[in-house]
Amino acid sequence: MGQACRRLDILLEPTHDQVLKRKEVLSKLGILESAQDVQLYSITGYPFCNTSRFTKYFYKPVQLRSAPDIVADITGIEQETDGLLEEILSVTK
Image (cartoon, rainbow, N blue to C red; front, top):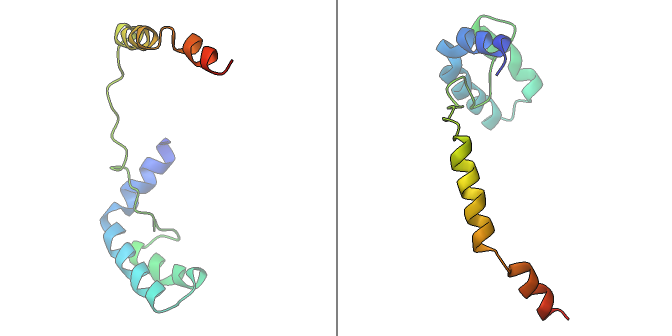
């Protein structure tokens, strides 16, 4: 996520739940999304809002695997499938 998006998330975080609830009510009332903006902006106090369920807390980075672990997995897969291609080709002949 870019720095600009993270900054916007920080600004919108305090009102995010309230915006989502209001959006749900407005949608159930059949109000077009384009007409919802004014009400949602009044909640945030900015001329923009986040109506997505995704926030800066959505993505949780994971620890990358080490190169030796990846090589070991690939080697294991190669060993498990050894001869498989020849077997498949011999059946189709």
